[in-house]
Length: 303
Image 1 (cartoon, rainbow, N blue to C red):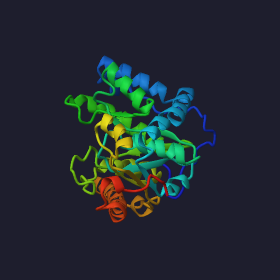
Image 2: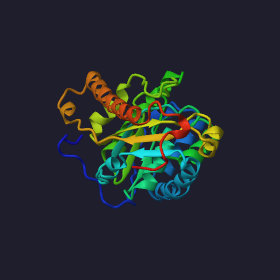
Image 3: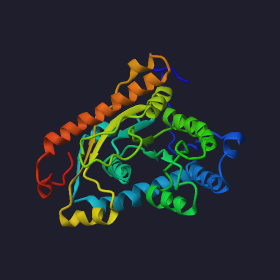
Image 4: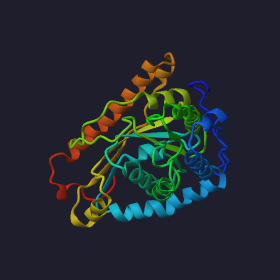
């Protein structure tokens, strides 16, 4: 593990072939045949030339259709906070989680509104996305295979959680080194189904552990205005749906926490700090947009 004040600087070649980690036979053996096949397929799509190809699809195809579905609704604030990060060091985007489409929309914004090198990864719950061809298809269509690495921590078969040891190593590696690496993460761990867009679930310590071990750049993001219903979300772009607001905060300095003991308590403290940064952005959103009728909310322009 590198020192807190001496971050690993990745090669400046955006086409570098990142081979990543390899699961042990013991870790791999706990997966069902379909899960093994799904993992091997998605892992291959996240390496070398394949990863560059799918990143091109994200930038030129995926971001475009999301733009078409949201351009009348989109309001972005603070994009310079992300654009100004160092591409030679990975960036974790930590965001609140209210919709299936949160990170897809954020990814469209960063591709279209910055010229920064971007190679995306979204750690994901393995259930559905890795255990059937339908899940693999959804991963390709919605994420261009970027929903990687998979975690089985909530699987009913406890043995499968042994595979998460590999996934954690892989995730820490992605967050430690890699030119242009951008990793999307939700500290809450699951979607918040509350009607209040300014409410948050407790932050989970997992993201704190990843950050403690990898020491990446960290940018908080607050998202509001997205629904979980794709047809109505798209139609709302032309029928006066709720405006989508995405706030990028300043990179968070966490050096003081890296001096502490590597423990669950430290990991939770990091997660809580990040959740508070997201909440602070929510306060800015409330101050600018709160109480305004939906059809009058914002002007569709980015700042």
